Amino acid sequence: MELNENARIDTSQVDDRRGTGGGGGLGIPIPIGGGRGGIVGIVIAVLVALVGGGLGLNVMTGGDEPQGDNASLEQRCAAEDALDQLDCRNTLYVNSIQAYWRTALPQALGEQYRPTRTVFFSQAVNTACGPADSGVGPFYCPADSLVYIDLSFYRVLAEQLGAAGEFAQPYVLAHEYGHHVQNLLGTNEQVRRAQQRDPGNANRLSVLLELQADCYAGAWARNATGTADGSGQKIFKSITERDIAQAIDTAEKIGDDAISKRANRPVNPNEFTHGSSADRKRWFSRGYETGDPASCDTFRSGQ
Image (cartoon, rainbow, N blue to C red; front, side, top):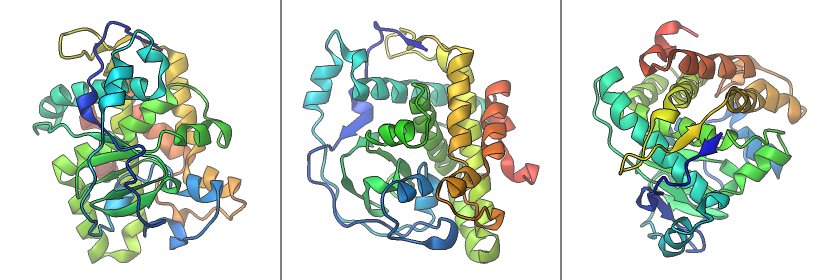
């Protein structure tokens, strides 16, 4: 993967709340397998990593959100070494993902894309879905339509789960923006209502939602080299098959069965909420191979 050093990094698509003291409380009720809380360290981090839509299916009311201060981020991302900075690279990934969906969503699924922001936070943050800490991993909150990430998650992903490839990072963000697309299409709300009507089927519906977000991420990856900044400069110079292999490897390592084995827990498909490693790999690959979000109907497939 090679980013274009001439692409303009649009920091307005990020809300940098690191160091704002926006946290409050530890943990939030998330419908993960078994519904357990209080697990310490890496186990809790990986169990709820990439929780995405799962958070929004149990929406709570949060307090007023502190606004971030993007001044430092803007300064770093305007410097010559911007692409050496983790936060600037991730901002550019966000720019690419949203540039893709501005065109792809109306063309493929008949809905206008409404841009949103990614919140960079450290340790804890308040959201319209309630307070969260870094242990929940990256997530999307449908109540405020924002993506949240503590960038230290990538260290957990690399050091604890072995997903160290650089392309794991845009895959994570593209997955969360897949949940934003689901929110715009009404898929999140449809799943929430279906879960309320049929609680016994709630986990299966959660899996279908997550696999669709993986497929959407794959569709972005296929088309990412065609995305451009506001002035028309391409954001990526190249994306290689090795990069795609890194994304697939990440999808496999965060499958429910892989996480259960790592935590020395029995593998119980009835408790899956995000999909098995094989399923996550398959659906990301489908999105990538077709490059078409319309091919990502996990619900109709009966997966």
